[in-house]
Length: 199
Image 1: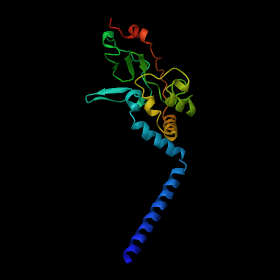
Image 2: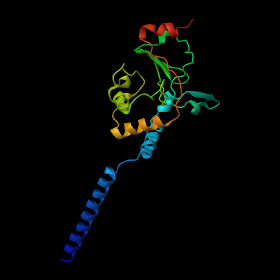
Image 3: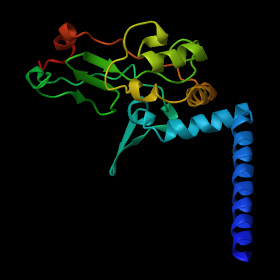
Image 4: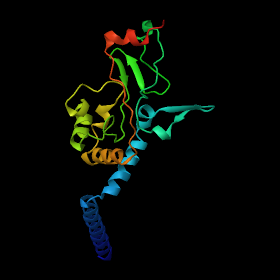
């Protein structure tokens, strides 16, 4: 009999703790996030998702390339000259290639350039609304309605993030230093040879 009371009491305590925790976690989930917390979340997501790899120019050291933090997220440098390449090496069954900043890529789609993600109004995301930004990553189209985003931009991965994550990324990118850098327009496959063929 005493054993039965003990089991019943233990079960009651377990369910009490379980439902109490459930209520607490629901309360935490519904707590609104402040703008500062949104920026901090966005910073964490951006800094741990490889955005620097393509969107930040590099400085070359004895230990290899490092991010140029004075140009962070400014995209492919507008004044950079693309190196020549043997076009016989590029194709669907061959290679896709990149240059020293990992900011310009060439492949069967043509040449793509990493965008300026800073909040510069003329050359970056300054004039892009939160809605346009989210739509871009959800649908893979520039500003949500323009040309398709090109490889290697993994928009189909980022587009699976929650609305809060995407809003946080946007809030963080809008909070960083604006850098005026007009990234070149993509080059179509039929024009690649004009830009990259060895002389």
